[in-house]
Length: 133
Image (tube, rainbow, N blue to C red; front, side, top):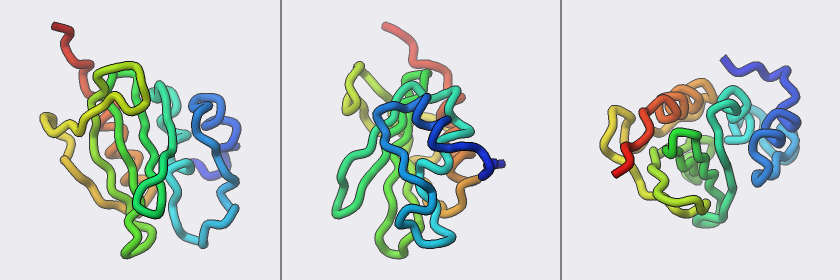
């Protein structure tokens, strides 16, 4: 369960320095979930995180310590719905990844509740690291 009383700016910024964390109240309509708000419970599993522009909005790319990650995009229609897709990183760069469809994690998940977003990301963060060849 997400504890909204945590100082998210401090926790998320300490674990993911590449991601600017706005105040949860800054410019977000009431009831909408932003990816920054749900990253705090996942902070111990996060290796890196960054935001990038995407189709008039933005995406958040999260890299977990197990070399997998998630790409999170907000759908514009209807607003407040997020798409989450699992990733597998193959290099050290923020864009060194491919979509990963070979696990029990759904290829694409749509959700609006932060608890659902956390659950999907936790599944990805628990995947066994890829075998080294």
